[in-house]
Image (cartoon, one colour):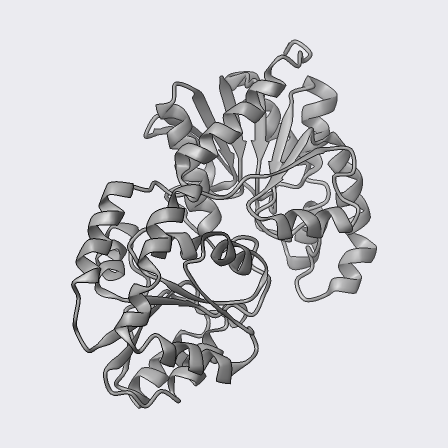
Amino acid sequence: MKILIVNTFYYPNMIGGTENSIKILAETLVKNGNEVAIYSVDEKENKSIENINGVKVYRYKIPKYNKIIKKFKDINNNLAQIQIREVIEDFRPNVIHTNNLYGISNIIWKTVKKEYNIPIVHTLRDYWMLYPIVSKEKLSKILFQPFMRKRTKYVDVVTAPSKYTLNKFIEAGYFSESKKQCIYNAININIKETKEIIQKRNMNSKEEIRFMYVGMLIENKGIRNLLDAFSRIENGNVSLHIYGKGELENIVKQKVKENDKIKYYGQLPIDKLKNEWLKNDVLIVPSIWEEPFGRVVIEANQYGLPVIGANRAGILETITNIQTGILYQYDNIEELVKTIQYFENRENIKKYYKPIEENIEKYSIENQIKEFMELYRSMKDTTYINIL
């Protein structure tokens, strides 16, 4: 099949978990014999077309606008409509799979359906279509949601990596005419390697317990709560290792100066981060916002790390699905402290190795590809208007 994937950013412009998920999806679809193209708007110049690991990438530039104009461009972006037409006419896809559309606008759904009648799958990876004006929920509902909601009628199938995220949009009246399906995000899991890692961890008898945080250093990720909680840990054999960057980086650096049990490494590339997963014992995900999925949970699990996670949305759902960690009330620092203290005993960490081995495969890329391919094939026979 010829599959066109649409997302604001694409590799090597990796902004977050979405870009990593899309890269894995695109490259695995190619390995399974499909032709895959990407339409993104992260080009610095004007336009480029390149091949990355078998994936054809159409990279365009969207001009920078002031905040007010940018928000209205998110509703109706004529330039994105022109660009998507160019990509369709060159690539001629059987199906179009859209993801994050900020900077592009979901107006392209109307263009695709009205002019080409190509089947559309949309994956919900954030809450942008609900709250385009960040932190101004009432204004979003009045100015933007009516447009965003109305256009969902052009989407044939909507998917999400968690039931929570899918239900949040359904409850808001979005995608009322679309087929709905939960398809978990996935990672390239080498089950044999994971079992070998866990076997080595089972033999570990070191007294030091290394906790880690991986992600952006911003308010909604709960980094302040994590630093506060860890400052209350008195055990000298416990340390916290932080990987990432963001607006709270200076606060993290200050805590490092105050507490020699806290270490900061900045943001590391994926290949170097693997060594850090192997060095540490437990991942902490302290998000205070409703994570659509919480990809970092399964990334930790594949290297044998159980997870302490805030009981929020996708994190709650992922940890509950595979039983590989402990949830705590996201705004209760004392409860987070007690959970950290529970894992100060290495024998308690080892209790989670078997559930990881038994359940991690639920999030394998093979399972995800199977589900998406079944979805694409069910739509393939839809005929569309010949491109002139």
